Image (tube, rainbow over all chains, first blue to last red; front, side):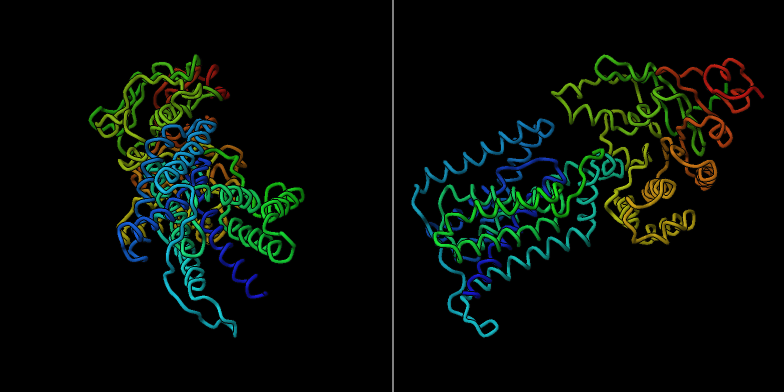
Length: 289
Length: 260
């Protein structure tokens, strides 16, 4: 059981970390709370289902194509619907929820409310530290961690990453340093949505697909971002691990725990916030933008 | 009144008027900065100095566009801004910066959560030539050695004076042709102020044109050969240091200096 707890925690923590860091990035740079963020995760799963079952593509090309398609949809949504409304925070919340609902209902129209699944990328088992683990789980965890590390490297070691971090700190000053903050925001939206889509694509072979699958992760991502401290990527990653571990422990150790995992995780968040209202690694966003 | 010949003007502002909602912050302001000059713009708090620099740098128009549809976006801008002969008043701030007009903002505003080195590299964002970048960085480190010593320190933890050096260093990393420095002396001790103004003079001697906006009139007039006085949103006086100092009305009403 210990192995199950460990594997489930690792999978969920890395999926949440992918979703939460993307959510934090786009919040930091474009100053928007994108409630449609996890809908991109859902879309990627359905696109893979279509590409593999309808078009008969292999799983890997279907994954890559799905991520690319989701990024195009996300960038267009951002430029056409969200960016013009950026200064109206309430309007952005409504627009992004509406967007997620539209995606959900379109999936209902095209695929119905049935549970769907996609084939596994790899089959068989491998032995890790003396324990037999499904190869698909190992590949998924490895790929998620590798993508997170790549995003981290881009942010910390490249010129684009510096521009993203500077824009997240102060849009106005980034602008007078010659940075095209509108373009940087769009690129950040592309990175964040690619992260959400990659998370969706990588867990699609493990989870079931259904049109409301964006809602629970969205609640958890909001909890993680608040728990980790709004705007802190490090905080998002650590909070993802805390929430994923508490979810898994409740699911495995309590009778009917799977029904309580959300309530328990959100309870953990509330307790931490009572002690540290700014979150674990709270970053002040009160300064001039 | 000393007015440099037009052909050598790097910055020309003509009839600039800016209103935020019903408040007029700039009223028909005209000024010019010649190539290689160090020009001062002095005036009391609330005169419109920062608004003038923000308008020239394109930030007021950007604010208007990004806040369109909200009360904060109810901004009216009229008049003309030319940089090196080209109209720049409809260009976005990042394009104006790319032309070489760079603002070193009021209250320094370093990227507080980035290191000193990252702040300087953010200034060098447009610089693709590695050798030129290295040369500029060496020049900035030579002018402000503390920025080299504290390269890995998070800039939010620097002292006020060090943050001001960082803000100027970051602006220099863009390799500006015109550096607009907004109230660099705010909150600094007299000694640090003096040191900073000496650095600003040195930047100008290195061939960079500077428009220095300040409340500390005495210090500004001591380093700028030519200055403008802005009061109640208008330019009320301008000229060479000695002319401004000799004008008793300017002295009493606007500069707040003791008579010579």
